Image (spheres, rainbow, N blue to C red):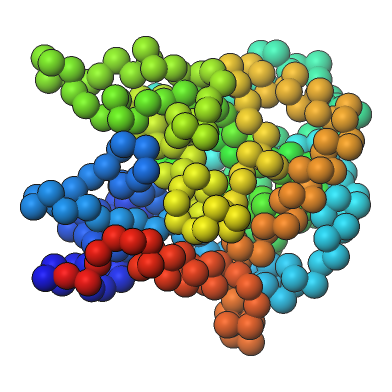
Length: 340
């Protein structure tokens, strides 16, 4: 039998950065994206045998976001906690390489703000935070204390600012997903993402001349249909991995029983049409406090699944690790023959 299928492999980095052997090895836990799925974008071993990736969240080591803390929050607190800011976005330096990868949308957003937000001081009646992160991980213009501190303090200040904000943009990075997405959820901030249409089954094939497929014909920006696995929060090109293939235990991912999968769209704000629509979308939502509270409540229901219990919290609470085990068991019992 195939020994690869008798083991569970742990890949502690994004698939893109992993050793080629780990990208195509049996059943494995990975930060994503997964390279085999239910949408036709299926990868195989050389002997044409299916392999499977199970996506897990990034690790957050902040003591204030351990499972005991998350579980102790009354569910009502997720939508009654006062927010000072309409949204918070921290960003790093721009560089030429951004034009060649998916971070370009972060640059587009900053350009949109510089050009069209000059006279905008408030979004929905609240100020917003847009801060550049220094090389030490701190903000170049400190928000809370007015002075530079240690990197850990800066990190604390960022998380604190997230917790004081209604929305937090999580624009495409080096790979789908990214750590920031899970951090803002733990802080109680609603993630804001760009939506791309993609057809990964078609886009992963080359044109007849051997060149890259013209994936724009399958979408680019536009209303996606996650039920049919066409929505990506990363890209519309051949690497436009769908939500199901990028986020842990996502709805329609077939990684858990359907009633246990996470419906990210119930709380994530999806921006259609590019960065120019971030401001009008958030302004409209800020006029609808009932909808904001609904999203915050849905977010609060699933936040516990994005924190790992450590020390005294280990193996005590329902958390990312317990969901990971549940997903592995579900995979083992999914009807596929992994016995070798």
